[in-house]
Image (tube, rainbow, N blue to C red; front, side, top):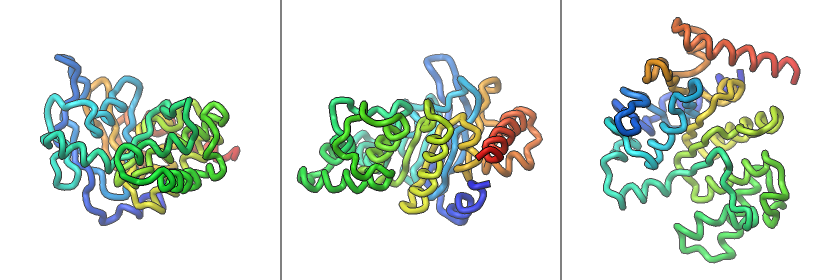
Length: 270
């Protein structure tokens, strides 16, 4: 299992990077999830998983400050992100890189211009320096030579990689990916998984991924939280491989057994 070797070893003994305590997510009086408690260690590839409608993407929006908790707190190391002043939170946000499900590239801008946007906004670098860094980030994701292409001129998988290059523009400590494989064919999805592992190993970043793609979960994750829509809370945390081996919860086993079968079937044909 690709995720159980280097992925698991990277975070052994690592310090806690993200700590979620007693988090409740709600829309008005409707409670989506309650009493979420988990820790993401530095260097983890941490997957937020569960069935449709359980609040996976909503949890990511809480982690990056786009939505406020109904109760509970989120810490980045010993920094209380939930209780921070706006200017303190703004500084912390510059340490995040975010890849949304759509990729969210500006169609009227080249790939280099898209990747350079965060650098224009948050640094005093010259246009030449920004262009050089954008080229380096594109090369990191396998898009060397595509600086002057527009998003419409490249494939969906390449657009996702360009979005990833932009997420890395400011050398973030934490990368957040919302359904990175959505809309991709199996080969492109697998290549993206391999790229995520390479980036974690080369950059030492902590990576949080929202996904329901079971093959990806078993390939990249060494830590996770499992959200259950019916009980409206987490029902498991930890390495998905360990969950598969040891969980006695039928909801977890059903989800991950389906994942193991899919993963094995793809590997046997690949």
